[in-house]
Length: 391
Image (cartoon, rainbow, N blue to C red):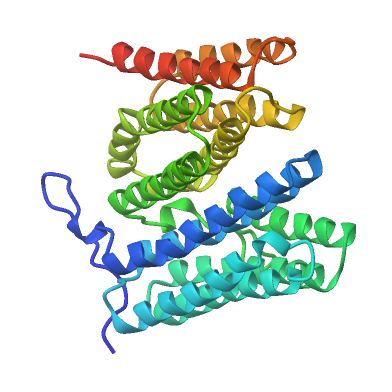
């Protein structure tokens, strides 16, 4: 049987065509367009503190299953038939998981848990089969990962059978197990811990995959903006809210893609330990970036529907979305550059968002006005960083 692994060669110029994202991977990502839309719409319908916490947990689960699959396709060749079939099976499970998101803490909790566990455990089992003849330390690393995922699966499934608060608690335990496992280097009694040097990832592939997920989230944000605007009566305030939302989405794109992505890409491509970079910068630091985009999408929909006023939950979304996004981008750029402090533009942007909170309590300050302020802050951050890094 032919090897299912990607070729790992690099050309003298430093490019790596073997790490190019394939069409089947992009096809697989369409499932997560649906997942992001489900989370966004469900969060909007349950915009409370309890709802926000639960949907953040669901988002982390969606991100975790996607990023783990991206790690696997970083090594496996999606052009091989067995790998393609595995991705198609994961797509089916992903669709079931995504369809159950709005009622994951209700009647469809067991479906969500089963689909999630099938993706995590089943994919890793397939990977172990695919690399069974590879280097011993490489195989051993993924045996450890398989054990950790099996442990978390017990709590995911137990939560699926439970109801109410016990389900939430069990799922928090399950995700906590998965969340700390990369940081703990998947330590297992008797097997020890893995080494990031064993994870010889393709920097091109990992950077491009995560950038594409950010595009998925931004695309969902624009979809929500356009669909909501189309359903509204086009008053002056609604048109203004639409323009503010579009400018805000452009600013989000600019902050991530204008310079930070390229610098991080260069860093992981030339790193002596790309596995460590992939674990910290791409596995962990991208979660708040994606979460911030989703909350911004919810805020845009709220402002378009009610530009004159916002509830306390709406205010939290209008300010919290940009803040979460800036925080994620700030940490991502900090750990992928040789700077001792986080980007000053991002820190100032976060302080300005914090200073905008008193405006939300002003009786005459509208949701549209607050959204314009937060969008203006994002634009300032984008322009500041562009000018600061200009040659």
